[in-house]
Image (tube, rainbow, N blue to C red; front, side):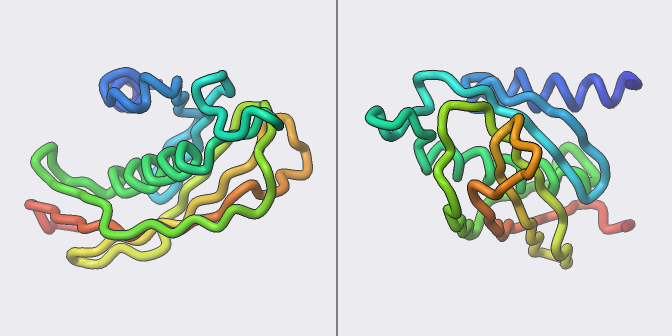
Length: 146
């Protein structure tokens, strides 16, 4: 891991307050792809009867992953990105384990970025989807050299 990678990891995990609060861990990042892990803890529970993740927390993590994937296309610290829309389909319950969320670039236009995300439980060798989603982001690059 080089100095730039260490800075990106620190920024994603420790400087962004919601990521720090959730304990988001960056597992892998490259252009067009991101993989993160978020540990299970009492603050993420939405259904206390069954100890399941709150859907809003899963959506938040998926939105963050979409933004991080978009960040792999930024050309300057002054570039801007903001969520326009996010859609999440919940496919199976997320019981008391850490979640893994992966994100991939679907489309990068001159002003719009679209990412696909997939969430599954850690330690699930079959990687059955907990949720799948798509985020649409307003994407403004000040330096259009790409």
